[in-house]
Amino acid sequence: MNPFFVPSSSYSSPRPVSRSSPYGPYGPSSRRGWSVSDVPRRQTQQYYPEEEEVEEEEYEPMEQVYVGPDGRPLSQRDFMLLKRRLMAQKEMEMREKQRKEMEMRKLKEIERQREIERQERIKTEQLRKRQQQQQQQQQQQAMAKQFRNVIPVRSSVHEREEEERKRKQDLNRRRSALVFMFNYAAKKIQRAYREYKLRQHKKIEEQKIKMVEELKLKKEESAKVLQRVFKSYIEKQKAKAISQKLTKLKELKNKSLELKSNYETQVLESPVFNPNGTISKKYLEYEDALVKTLIQLDSVSSGGNDLVRLRRKSLIDYVQGLLDVIDKHKQDEKNLMQVDA
Image 1 (cartoon, rainbow, N blue to C red):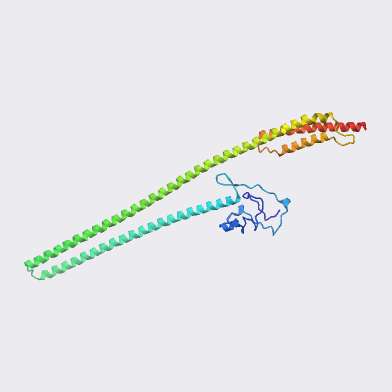
Image 2: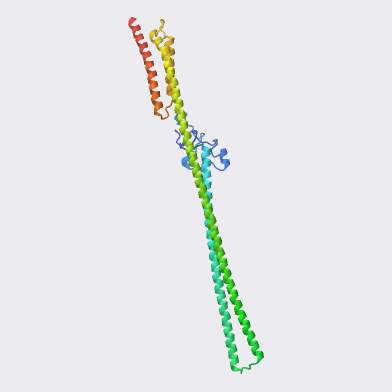
């Protein structure tokens, strides 16, 4: 045997794969995007007949069977296409999972950056307010110091100016409070809207996952139905094969009974040997018919069925008994001829 030849149970043909094979590395399969090199080592073989020739008597062909995930037998090409399709589906699922994880990380990073910016804006606003308050306090202290050295002269014009200044300060204070409230409300609304969009996104993803699971369950149920149909079909085929074998055995039995009724009496009552020493034609025809019947019985396979095996065995014993009877008759007549001689 060639040491480079590695048989495997995944081949549909016992022929070795070569460079010229349609499933080899240079065959038409490679133009479809895959080749034998895509299959694991334990399922492939690389064999080149020009490097070493294998004797035919040393090669023992093996019965190869491909079975799909639903139990249905497949050819080598269908098996390889199914395997590649499953690998591509698995790769797509992994890529989709990685994409979702990347999106979630991006969303979290954006949310973190926005929170940092919000904190910085709050701190900046607080610092600005403190600076304004400090400036106002400094101005008030300077004005108080100035008026402390000068005798205040109250007049109607001065009082009106003071009231106008206080009114403007009050308006500015109210305006600042309103702006702060509006900004705070806008931030609250933006945060609530982002949370709402995130909830909607999660809800849509959950619905998609649920739909995929339902579709998967439907596929599994349909696969189970197909498996049941396929199994029932196999059982029917087996029953049909057994019925055909039993019918053939019955025909052979009727044939053997007919041969016995037509030839046995004539063969046993007439001499086996002719005067010139040759065997009679009737004996040879009867013996040849019984031998052919035995060959036909041997060609009937039981297929693991006990009923077929028992009926075939009984019929073989019956035909073999008929052959023993004529052989004994032939031997007896031969012995008589030797005694007479």
